[in-house]
Image (tube, rainbow, N blue to C red; front, side, top):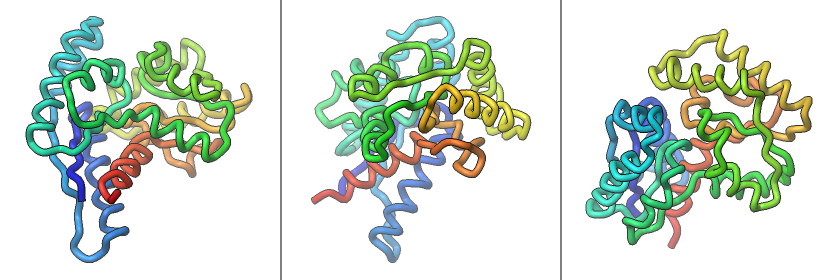
Length: 230
């Protein structure tokens, strides 16, 4: 079994989901007392969020690149960044590594294509929804990406940072997401990407009128596939 490197802590709430999902899938596939071989580096999210808010992406890239390098030194055979937003600096992080960096958008696009999704809604932080570093990787694979209006983008971003990253689950916020998803369905979306690893703490398939693509779950499953490859 290969060693999975997790670059987490952004937030630690969703990193818990990665750890749990990966180990549950290893247990289901291998049985008995098997569990995943994982090395985890969990950063201080306050430092990263400060970089995001100030637009200092170079500093965040430096912090995460150093952490990823330490994961490689600790024996990771490949590395996952346990957040969507910080894939903005994935190229800088990958440049410090000799082991593969498994991009969350690429793993998600593979599943979208398997499900023959041609037009997908994207929910996430305002950085993920508005900037091209994430969307473009999906668009380049022939899938159209639509996002909410500006007011709803701000509402989603607020819920992520003031509630979900702090482990707060608010039924009213779930209703907000449900309304936004229904609006995106009216715009022709065939599915919705939960493009922030915390959103899956609030929304699952039973809450949505569209097929849900939970990036945390997809990313974790891809890690298990790679870990078990001969």
